Length: 344
Image 1 (spheres, rainbow, N blue to C red):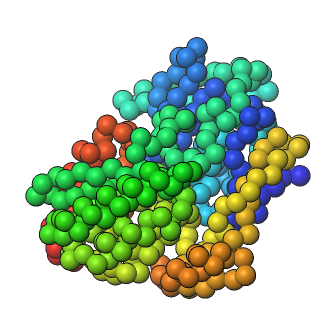
Image 2 (image 1 turned 90 degrees about the horizontal axis):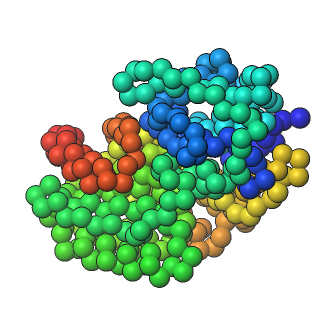
């Protein structure tokens, strides 16, 4: 029996549930590595890159776990780190220590190696450290302070950060989108940077006023930042922009969490044996070919267009998603990309 009975087509995916007990460590895929970015206060653990677990190279564990994780390569990299803190999963994958502890080998930014041992009985509910919609932030309880963050960097251009499209009341997101659309119309002579890194989705229909404003503007330089934590409605947002803007849009970052053909996430099922939760859906989206079927919501089907592909124009993997570094990163991208975009 599989550890996680999830198909590879992305119809379902594992999300943490309070019944899953994990070691009090938070692992997140950052860039091309898995990093320990948090631990319970009583555990002295250095932040750093995970190299091995119980003496097994991390690549071996990832290879063994791949068949149990749904979706494309990047989605597997997003949801996979929870297995590294889940003693039950490590045992089922064949990487238990047999000593009642789990040992991690870590390398900090200075190259120093540390071996960290945690008792397998020292666990916490998985949902305390691994959010249902993994955003890659250090704080698992992170919620956006604002749905739209607009900054005018004077001659460098304008940046608009869109951290989430999940707004239960819809009013805050709508107000932010409206303000961003007005700013875009007022700054049509400035380069525009849009950041949807870590945006796990929500309702893309609420963002259409901003898409319309960008599409109708005379802005020549439009950069969109994406990463492996860009999912669902955020991918759709990028897809529609790409369809409308063509070569005016420059896509920078890393491969997103899903492709353009996917099943939108819906309800939840509790798995009684593993105590995991599976999120499922039958709502089909095909933004690659521009097709829909009977499961596609009519309001979505009316917007679907054939995008073909969303290939990166430039791979730029940011090592840290720290909130206080975001503005600096946006300025750096605008500075670095100005000449490159003009020479395309």
